[in-house]
Length: 345
Length: 285
Image (cartoon, rainbow over all chains, first blue to last red; front, side, top):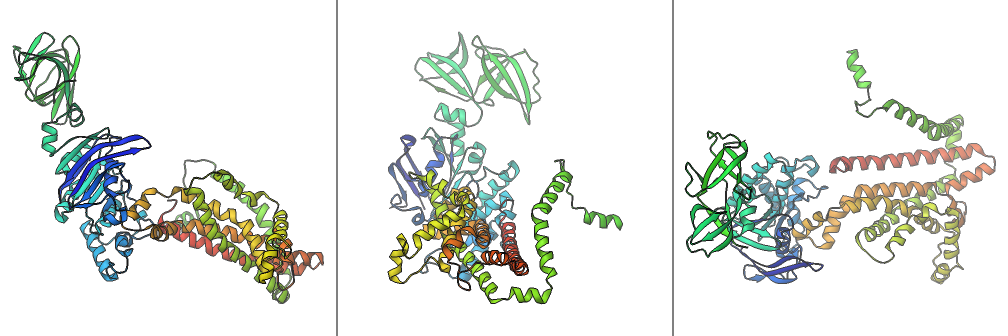
C-alpha cells in the first residue's frame, strides 16, 4: 500500500522534532530513513505507525486518512531495535499473537493461525524452533522472529526501527541481504530507519536523508551518492573533502592559483568545493592543479589513502590512490578533482 | 574411577572471586545458629513424643481447626493482596500524581508498625460499635471477632510484600513490548492480560509466597481482631501460646511441628514453580 506523509510537524514539549516533512512512499517500495541521531528519522517512523501523533499534518495510507486511526486500527507491522518479543510466549505464540487477539469475526481458525505462523517461520528460516522461548535464541534469530510476528497480520506497511542496530557486524550483513530477499519475495511496502549509510545504500530502493527534523534529499542510492544536493548530504554520505575556493570568470581559484577546473555559469565569488577522495586525477606537471605536501599515507584494503597539506591555508585533503603508487612523506603531489560540486554559504 | 567420583562431589565452582570457603563457612554457621538449631530442637522434641502421642495431639479437633483457620485465612489474605498489591504497584509505577511519594512510603508502614497497634486499630474500626463495623452491623455483616476479621488483619500485614516484590519487575517492563502488542492490534485490556501480567507472574508468585508465609506466622495483629473463639476464630500460633501457658509442652510442640511441615511444603512447591518459570522465560538470566 502506498503511504503519503503530508506536511508533518511534530513537537515534543515545544521542541520541534520534525518540521514540515512530506514524503511519498510507493507501493511495494523499500525505503531507508537515514540520518544522524536526533535527525527525526525514528519520530517519522513512529508517526507513520501511529505510535506518535503529529502536531500538524496528515498521514495517508492509500487514499485513506490514517492520522485519525489508532495504532491498532492502522494494521502495520513494526519491528523494534531490541526485538520486543513476548518472553513468556514460545516463538510460535509470538508469531501467532497478532492473529489470536483478533475479534472472533475476523479471527482465522486455530489450525489456520498455526499454519500461517509455521509458514512465516519457514520464510524467516526458523523452522523447528517454534517451541523455543525468546531467551533461548540468538540476537539474529530473535529479530527474525520479530519480523515474522510483524508480517503475520498482513500489514499495510512494514516499519523497522534500526532493525539490525543491536546485532554484531557479521550477523548484520547477513540479515541485510536476507531482508532484501524477503522483501522481494513478499512485496510489502517497507520503511526502515538506520544511521548506517552502508545499510541504507545497499538495501533500499530509495534513501531519505534527514537532518535536524528535515528531509535533506530523497533519491536512489546512486543519486544520493553521486549527486548530493546539499553540503550536509555530501558530508554525511561517504568520504568528502572541502576546500575554500573562489570563482572568477568561470574558473576556480585556490589562493592565487587556478586549479584548472572550469565552472561555467557560476557567479563570481567565494565558494566551497566538495569532492570525494576517489574522484581525482593525478597530474605530472602543474599547469592548473591542486598541489599539496604528503603528511600521512595509509593502506586501506585495496587503496592507498594519502593525506595532503594544501596551500597557504594548510587545508587538509584526503585522496585515494592505487596501492602500487607509493608516495613518501613530504613529497609533493599534484591532482585535479574530476567530479565535484560547489556550495555557497 | 575415583577421580570421576571425586569430581561429582566437588560442588565448588572455579571462580575469580576468592573466599568461597570463608563465605560458605560463615553462611552455614549462621544458618545453623539462627535457624537450624532451634528448628531441630523442635523436631527432636516432637519425635520424643512418640508417634501415637504426636498423632493424637496433632489431630485434636481444636488443633485441626486452629491450623485450618491459620492457613485458610493466610491463603485468602495473600490472594486479596495479590490482586490489590499488583494494582497498587501498577499505580505507583505507571502514573504520576501529587502525593505519590507519600503513598509509596506508606506501603512500608505495615513493616514498621507494631502489629498489635494495627490489630487494635482494625478492631476499633470493624468492631460492631466501630466506625465501619456499626455501618455493616445492620446488614448482618460481622467482621471483627470472626475469621473475616483475621483475613483483614493479614491483608494489612501482607500488602507490602506483594507491592515490593512486583514493583521493581514492573519498572523493568520495556515500553517497546507494550507498543509491539499495540501495533499487532491488541487493545489495552488484551495487552495487560496477555502480555504484561504473564510477564509478572514469577514476581507475583514470590509476593504471594511471602505474604502467605507472613500470614501463617502472624500473631500480634490477629489476636486483637480475631476474638479467639476456640474452634471458630482461634489461630494456631495463639493455640501454641495457650498450651505453653498451660505448661502443656508436648501439645505446643506438636502444633508447631505440623505448622512447620505444612509451611515448608507449601513454600517449597511455590519456589519450585518459580524456579521452573524463571528457567523457561529466562528471567534474571
